[in-house]
Image (cartoon, rainbow, N blue to C red; front, side, top):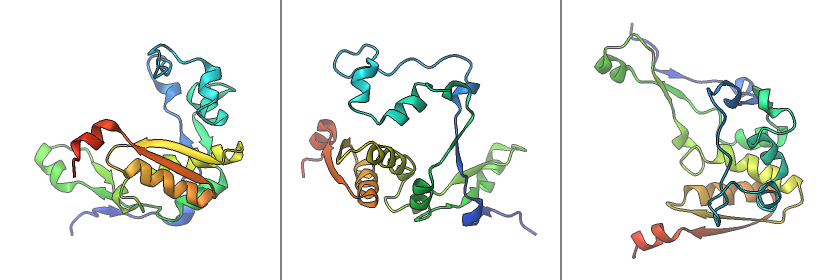
Length: 175
């Protein structure tokens, strides 16, 4: 009998928390850089760009430094139900090729509405931005998946979205 190669979770088994890897890292992460000065960005400037709750999570403020699990808001969980849970696929041929006793799995994130894992983040970002009163999200995209994920999230939370294609991507696609 061959080993199972796919794992499917039920909707009830969807994670209710995000895992925060930062408390387990061997050293502190460097601060985010200001795109204009290339120096660590000042918190006030960051707060004009990014929702405050995401800054607290990212910069480990308000008790997040030691918090391993962060609750996923129910509004974001509802958005995830559009395409989650995605299947875990066991890479049996890769295991055989590597001659490893390890069990190797990969996620099928291409089954999301935009064909990638990006809505996992865009829904949360849009949720926190809406909660803080944002009316429009502005972002850039290269191949288009991030722009699509942001547009989808904005539609779910009922606000405007402006997506710019990055110059390099635009120049690489003369058609």
